[in-house]
Image (cartoon, rainbow, N blue to C red; front, side):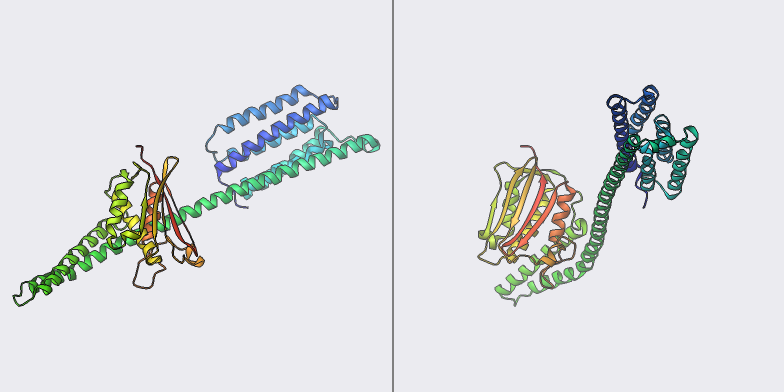
Length: 408
């Protein structure tokens, strides 16, 4: 098994040692008070207290030095050996707990230290035979043998529970770490795509600038022709206005590339945002249901919010042709503001839903979209510390943005 991260291993070693201290203290109390066994409680208490005090110091560490974990496990082997030597030596049924230390070393340490810990455990067990040779008379006393076998069963159960619990929880924590790593890798991949989008946008703005300038000059020359009728002049004026509009769009692409550099995060009144949103879709304004609580605000770059909501509404209008309505609704949730965009379209196919939000993925026919609207919405929400969600079915699609609210 791959060694676990040092901080994770340290946290679980501290927790396991507290369990061990509690179990040792409990067993000693039961043996001395319940079973009335004659035990050197003073020395046993010194050993258990030493383990507890060392664990207090260990628990205050945020990072484990390289040799701390293996040396701690070796020290615990010595402490266990002393406890066993004072309570029956090799005949103590709790000698099975040596296996717990070896298993823990296999989980949290590398192969070399694992083999070293296993060797140390075997040596410590052997030392018990030298310090206190086993009492062979035990096998001739049926009552003592039954008690010994019961103790072996309890010791085995304790070892099994400890090993299973530690390994299961460590494996769970490691899976959580792997999930975090996967999310970080996905974020890095999205950032790389965004960087490529920035390069593409800047290049497109540069390449398209020249032909737009040529078209504008040609339109101006045609507009100056005296024989041109009034309708033709109006068409040329429209062409020139649309060219200027294209230039503005390209300028934003070259400087923004889908993000919001230079824009200040400040309180933005949702009423003003929804008003500007309606103005962007004059032909479909009657199909839009826009609502927000009175005085509601969010903390965000206003321009980026306008562009993101415009992109989501455009998607919704295309997904639900007239006379179907599109709803944009904002509602407070704790210190956040939830903005939902809902349509009544046919929904997104299940196979495509997981891909929605990735740059350059679109469910529209070729040539009708680049698949960036939902991606930019996700990016904005995550940049502001909020969340993005999308749900879709036969009844339509719902996009949910959680954005930081602004105090009134």
